[in-house]
Length: 251
Image 1 (cartoon, one colour):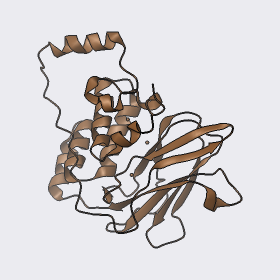
Image 2 (cartoon, helix red, strand yellow):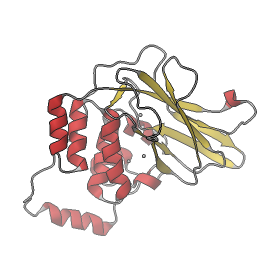
Image 3 (cartoon, one colour):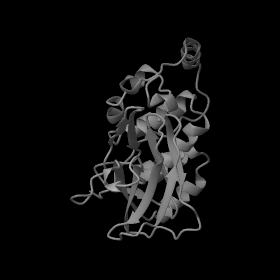
Image 4 (tube, rainbow, N blue to C red):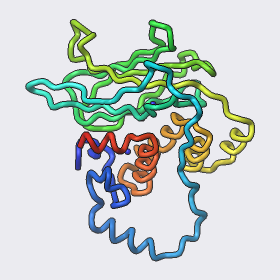
């Protein structure tokens, strides 16, 4: 619900446009290159605007997503966990096996545990442990061998810090929610015609499919995290669901 300060150790935010999340500025040479590039005529077609349109799917009472500080011990710096998911509405995916993303502010001696549940069912669909050695954005792909998410069903996914193996109720847990939606025939046609992940992300964003949008944008970013436009796209998207302000508070 796989974007210096602790968070920009993995995001390396650039530019005054995003000063609210400016964790590490671009090198002077990079700024100079960008300034020179800005004076040149743009021959290629401009990219579509990345504007996320939330679906009219408010979270039910008691289902608000959580974010926050995770754990502190004498030998361990506080870990902040940020799920890349909206907190005020039910995020949609068009995928039967979506990818999940979250950010951690630093490494941890404790493993993290991801879990995916269908709403109202206590048995998890999938559980996966993850080791974190540094601040980073984590991408977790739902295995294709698992049954697909069902359209119209609500699901909860969580990330917990397993610092207490004896009493799991003491472990910090952060959760978000999603549902699988259906694309219209016109949307499917446009997506098939799209020639880049960036174009597909813009189409998903306009259609209100958060998880597919963040997947396309975060995948581009993780492939080339120092490329300015990819950083900006990720920050632009996060800002639209309030995550940039949240991340700034954790610097």
